[in-house]
Image (cartoon, rainbow, N blue to C red):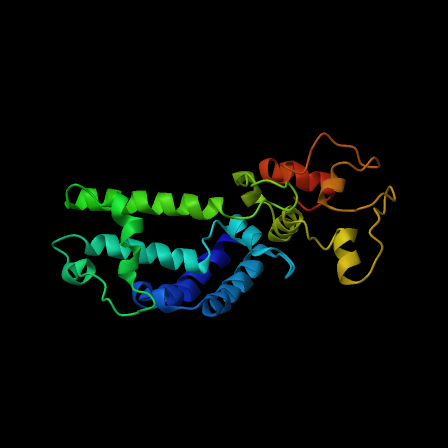
Length: 241
């Protein structure tokens, strides 16, 4: 997954980010959705998730910002840099917006970055200000993601031990964390019309949570262990480790 995400960042997102402070403030919501769809497709390939998967899950799994959020962050960081009196575009960044009815301009982000302007414009202070802005923006953006469908809350980070698992196993785990997995009868009931009944105990619904509550396969694990104990969860489900 990391290799695919890195490849997308190098040859896909790099194009989306090019000159973002200039063009991104002008985009309509429809245009943003069109670009976001492309990123969603790339992240589905990286995670192995199905098309029904909520985009917020894809960005959680890959620790990626959504397209508009990331471009807005780049725009705000650029504006903060321009406020340096020694920057070549300082005069443009500090010129008041015209009184005509313009739609957007990167200077409209001035209020958003005003709290991060450093007291001194020496290189260490500039780097610290940009880093603080980045951390604040990422926190606000990730906090706005929808609760996980399985846990009904924001999910915890995935334990690093999952990186040792084969890709096909990691894809199934990611699908299970999304709530839509091909091994679940709840997914097959939605896609091909099968009965949403557990093949082992005949209970319904046969969803991610049921895998850890099935009386035919008792375990002390729970659904949250798909994040915190992925190897043990994969072994319980019968996946290749």
